[in-house]
Image (cartoon, one colour):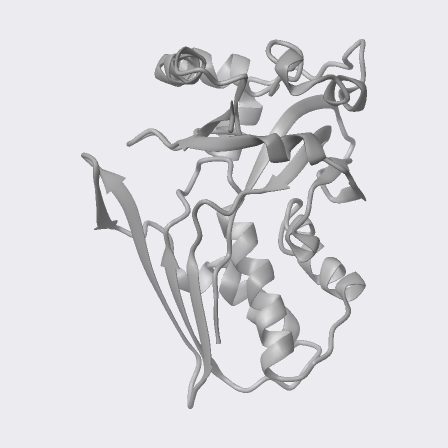
Length: 263
């Protein structure tokens, strides 16, 4: 079976408070972004194996680059192992072509994991309902449950509390994604500079404004510290506005940026 995991974009991201468990409470709007995708192939095999090939745009050209993590620890493998605890899965071969940039705040690894869960359920007639897939996904990462439903969701808590969100206004805009070469921002680095803050106006109320009024109002809390460490990202964000974007932002903990342009 071949599937095509795609990433998400964060529209607005507030870091409200640090939790007793060491995580942070946040609020954000997650929306699917289908302008780029990985290629995930899973087949039954005599023995388990995993192969990952990673691609990136280097000097304007798509090139294969080093996979700088152990494939055996990849989230696709962890997803398989998680289901194998509860179901008698046969060995499989997993082949993953990584096109979604790593360390860009797009949730590519989470998407790969959840698409693996769903593919295995379909391949082996496990008939796992979405509510159970969500429980499995939450064990793999805070933003993984979003990809079970793959539709706009307002998220809170650690990012694992979700409610459906109608975002029809976004249909009037096209998305342009910028992923700077050579800049990867880890979640640890992004959170290191965060000072949690309760905004005066809740994010939901700000999102209810016309998209043309989001600039400077619907903000990503990570931008302040990440831009301080990587000022070129602030320049790229401004370049989107210079090109006519009505709204631009960093996604997640960065380093990807996106702009919304009127169609």
